[in-house]
Image 1 (cartoon, helix red, strand yellow):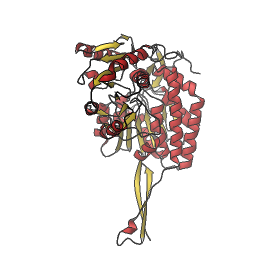
Image 2 (image 1 turned 180 degrees about the vertical axis):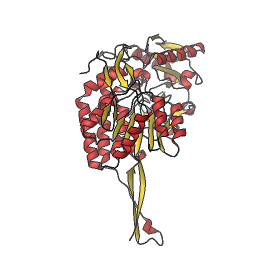
Image 3 (image 1 turned 90 degrees about the vertical axis):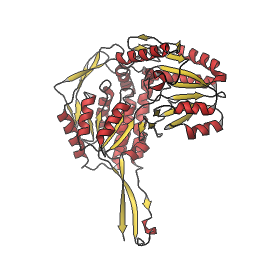
Image 4 (image 1 turned 45 degrees about the vertical axis):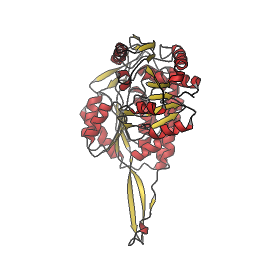
Length: 477
């Protein structure tokens, strides 16, 4: 079990060794705002050594079945230590303990699926012999590792999103330099120990902690990094793409997720799922429901039910089994959400539920009488706030959903197959979830967005395609 009072010091994991540094920084317990741990602060030299070690490790054979064995063992170890990791999540993220356990279980599954995919990486035959003059030739493709992958992960899902980058990268035969968010790095550090115990060869994983902007810049400067995989803000994603040059980049950059509730929807189902998926992890999820468009014929009954279910959510200590919503990641983020809501109210929005802050807690909030140009609708809130608006016809609501800089996922509640198929073709997102909210995800599905939501896909099978290169082999017989 995790000691909730002792402040532990964690080092860097470089070239198979744990290394202390001259400088350290605190990681806060997000509920108490007291230091929960200290982490090492890397210098440029540490980053360069880590990349060099990762590149050197590629010279040692790491066969597909060996990758499978390591990742499967890591998955098993993670499940065995579910409670330890869940408690760390609750402390360093502020995520409720029940939700934290769910994340750990999903992360173990992500590693398991990655292990299975390690045995399925393959090329294909290419019929070059069908071209005149090539009758005596045959060809096939191989998928080969890209090399050194820099994985930069966010604060909000620091076990599963690390596994979504680490698992496929290792399964594909790459080395990884992992830079977790400085406010929630402990789970990533513990995953490195777990990988080491599972038998991961020396140098295949490096974990660098400290100032995110500096480490990111040093990684981008290092030409031995072959690919960047990043989850975070569009601003940082655009910076990475501009600095990476011709190297591979995979970006998952957020959303202002819309969910449509049509007049024929199951309202109990819709309100239950929207109440859950607007506010889990205090709304700090890329696909959390932010914009809800409800058909005008059912608006009143929908709003009544959604308010009732939102009011029943328990806000409090993440370690309490009854808690549904914990604190936000830092006070400045809570204050930002408070400012956005106040601005919307000044512009005419009504607060139906919530709309108040207590320290780092922001209470689950429903806004009505909003318009699509309000900041609370136009930008990504990344907090426990959902806006509810009405619509009258299908074409109108599809246009309003698409009137966004983002396009990660959207939800649609309807039993009208014609509407569902029209939405599937016309809504501009990476994923449309029918009869569930935008925040539905399982870990082996392709996951990624369009527009400012980024490019590339997560989900082990799909991420492996991003993290490998296709090489053609032509034999002249």
